[in-house]
Structure formats: C-alpha cells, structure tokens
Length: 79
Picture 1 (cartoon, rainbow, N blue to C red):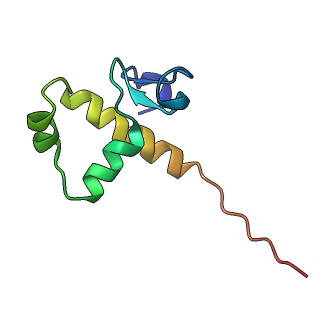
Picture 2: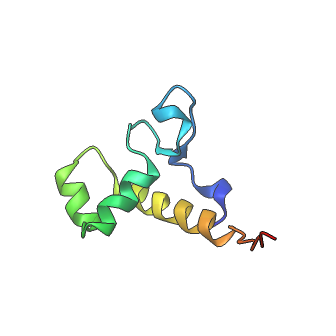
C-alpha cells in the first residue's frame, strides 16, 4: 500500500512532536510497534482502546513497514 493511501496516519508538529500518529489520536506508530513487540494483538488493542479502529492499527503497521523497507544502510569505515 503506497504511503499516500494511508489516510489514517497523520503528521502534526503540535501533536506528539510531529511523530506519525493515528489520525485524531495521540497514539504514535512507534507506540503501536512497541505494543506488538510486547505481545499485543490487533484484537487486544481494539479491546483495550475502543476508540482505536482496526484499520488505523493496520495502517500504522503498513507505515512502519514502508519506512523500514526504504531505509538505506551505509557502511562507514574509519581510517
């Protein structure tokens, strides 16, 4: 899914320091990733945070995947 189709991910410098967040929420993409790394599931997050929609969580995961996919690793050798 191209980033332009991620309509539930927003960037606002006045919210969470401009981090990518779920639209209308103070829940950042990195928070979603940390919850998943801790064993959370989409169903569990929706149950715990009823104001979150499953689609917003999925778009947060898509966003993170796209960012990492386009990351470049450059080796720098120090003489």
